[in-house]
Image 1 (tube, one colour):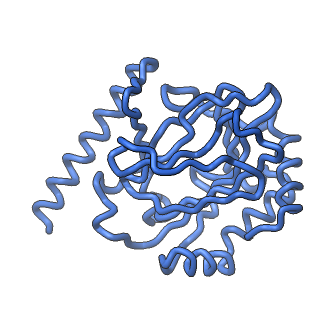
Image 2: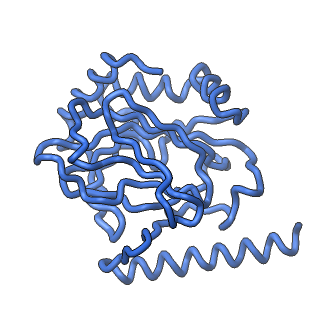
Length: 237
């Protein structure tokens, strides 16, 4: 779908500005993650690529591939844009926020474009896709330069790269993340109602042992949302 030389140029310019990309707060399920969602602060070639990925021309391609019609891009790149994770970093299994409050739209698709030339698979970093109750890993894909992954985002589309990266110091797992939206979505996709939360999930045999207060607060918030949505669906079905 993309010109490999163009992606290689984007990889190089992102590598040159990694030190200026803000790092998110480390929590129990996300470590050493840097994110830049402000298009105007991105290097020139990356800006052009992101603009193309949000264009009507590209949206029409994604609609044909996925069968999901009337897709909308996000000019603010909420949660998306440039993602970079360094040695020791990880992103545990999770489902993403499903509602963009500012746009008033449902999140339907993730597009992840990987920017890692000469990536060694013994460094880890493969994105894992798990089944709907996060009990079994169904697929895994390494983040090689030019590889792209598109998948539907629902309240049980669990994914992540949960093992700490073993890449050398100075090497980073780099990607561009784009999210696409629609005005409505199938009821079968919805478990917790409109949510702006990321829902992190432990794998079988895994326990989140750090940041216990934050984890407990997230768990309570999620349970309240699920219960409220179940009650609402019961009375308004």
